[in-house]
Amino acid sequence: MAFVSLDNIRVSYDGKTDVLKDLQLSIQKGELVSLLGPSGCGKTTTLRTIAGLIEPNDGTFIVDKNDLTKVPVHKRNFGMVFQSYALFPHLTIRENVEFGLKLRKESKSSMKEKVDRMLEVTGLNEFSKRYPKQLSGGQRQRVALARALVIEPKLLLLDEPLSNLDAKLRVTMRIEIKRIQRKLGITTVFVTHDQEECFSISDKVAVMNKGIIEQFDTPEEIYQNPKTEFVARFIGFENFINLAKETDYCYIAEDGTLFKTTQTVDHSDIKGTIRPDDIKILPAGTPTENTIVGTVLIRTFLGKSYQYEIRTDLGNLLVNDENTNTYETGSKVNLFLTPEKIILV
Image 1 (cartoon, rainbow, N blue to C red):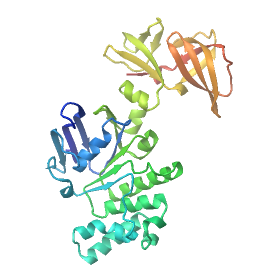
Image 2 (cartoon, helix red, strand yellow):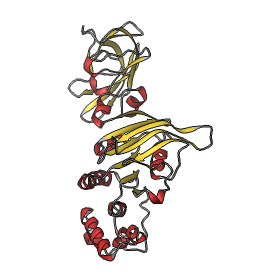
Image 3 (tube, rainbow, N blue to C red):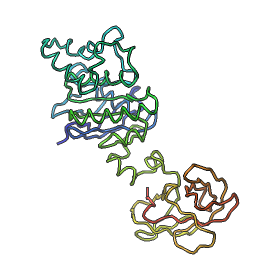
Image 4 (cartoon, one colour):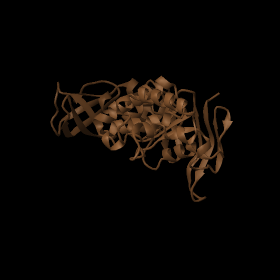
């Protein structure tokens, strides 16, 4: 049985438009699950529903076999880290971290033991007497994390916690968050719109769109086998071709071109998609199957490769090709779509 379960959750702010639509999500104990999607997809609403800041119109929310659907936020024993850190500027780092324990009226000895351990886990021992303004952004983020974890929450909720950091520090901190989460074995829900950040840190990813989860799987499976056009576009697939099923593993495009694949699907509205890196440019007239004839429109230098925009009868396609061969604007070429790289959505 899942440690965390959202079952048929529906949230509507105005009673007419559903922000979350019969949402289903199951999280195992100790997993780090990310909610990924563009602005307005419902990921923050989902997190706020889990936190208890929003009560769903319908559905149930269960943690460790306990129904928390109507339990108020202050009784859920969850830790939460926000984008803004929300540290108290007039308190030292130690005082910030122990704040939640003081509210719970824990003994001084217990409080000291827990705070000492958390400062050690987050690497903040040497900064315990400083104030937030004396720390860097990454250090302040670790203080917010330590404060959320010191209360020994059943669930850790992270709402785009790295969005205020520069690119280099974001990479460092996502590694740090994963290290701490693994060390403590705490079940975590992480909200982000950053695909790279999400895939690097997560055990599972829920890709959200318009209040529903379009795909829930491991980062590797989502990256390699997106199940819908929305998921494919969101994670970087840029070439889409309308197809009709000829036979299993063989599909026909609108211009009559046949494409062999290593996938087969039964639904009728089919698109084949392929990443720019997985299309090979061949000299015009090269005979081979899975090939489209095209004309180079634009060539862009990317450093290790060129990116070409190529006009075909099936639409314009983007292709990344190594520097070994270059093709000028106006050149006629053949495009070979590798069968095992064509994804059907």
